[in-house]
Length: 156
Ligand code: HEC
Image (cartoon, rainbow, N blue to C red; front, side, top):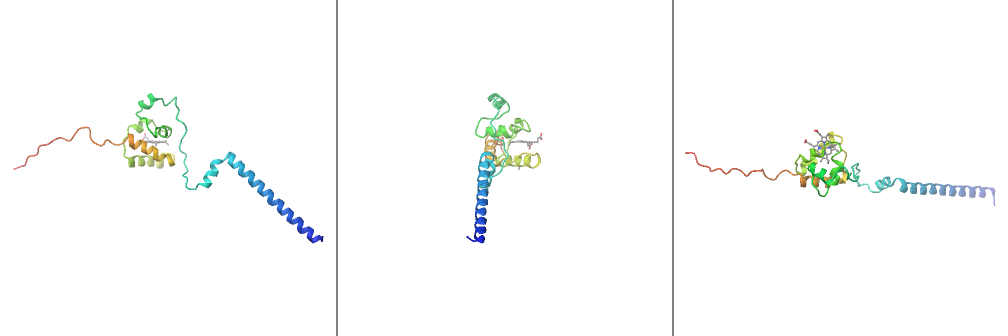
């Protein structure tokens, strides 16, 4: 073998070695990422997923007993858990239950709190929360009394 060929061979082997080192490092990084930062990974791979900081922590059962839920005027139903964990942090739950809004109205209230009161983005949880609120805290369809019955007479 000529000296030139040996040089070429050494260069090729070094390049191959370097490539393998890079691949091993990449593989280890990937494993570590899967292990410790799975959220980062899922964010990379699902670009459509809306980011949210909404609370989905389980409801504190000691605080939110059935009696307490009733006392503040909330009703059992789908979405209650999300309301308990997202709507009772800054103000009393009673502020929620004292109000009546349409679906659009509740969306506007949430938007207003997000724009001015530092309320977090609810992401995919906004829908079930708004469903719950507009189902149980909708404006009354009709006034409490029926309209007066008036007998009209013509003026002559
Ligand atoms: C980051 C804090 C924060 C969170 C969380 C929060 N709110 Fe509020 N909200 C406020 C503040 C501040 C006010 C104004 C309170 C006042 O006027 O005393 C308010 C007012 C309201 C009002 C009264 C609006 C009006 O027009 O008078 C309603 C209804 C309400 N919030 C519902 C909710 C609901 C439903 C949730 C959960 C989806 C929620 N809030 C979560 C901060 C928050």
